[in-house]
Image (cartoon, rainbow, N blue to C red; front, side, top):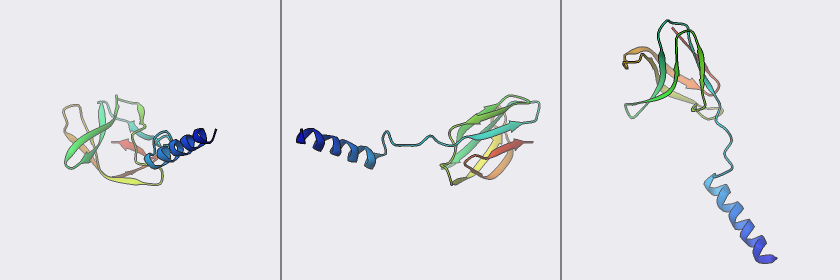
Amino acid sequence: MKPVLRALAALTTALALSGCGLESERPNIWLENNSEQTVILQARADGTPVPKVTAPPGTRQWSGMSPLKGYCAANWEIVDATGKVLKKIDRVCAYDTVVYP
């Protein structure tokens, strides 16, 4: 029985150190689109756009790909379907609602 307990302890330690299986769900962020066109909320990572959520006209959509609870991320923007920047957003925090226009 002792080897089983050691193996279980080792597995628990490995999971705790790697975070695997112990992560909590990421908070949502919301995009409220009050315009008549589809818009996309995206972050910029090293200058590359990373789409997070798309909202058709007159809808409110959510994304689970937000900053971690208690944190904010900088360099966000709302773009149209062609990638044209419609609005720059300094930062988005966990649980935020971003409104366009």
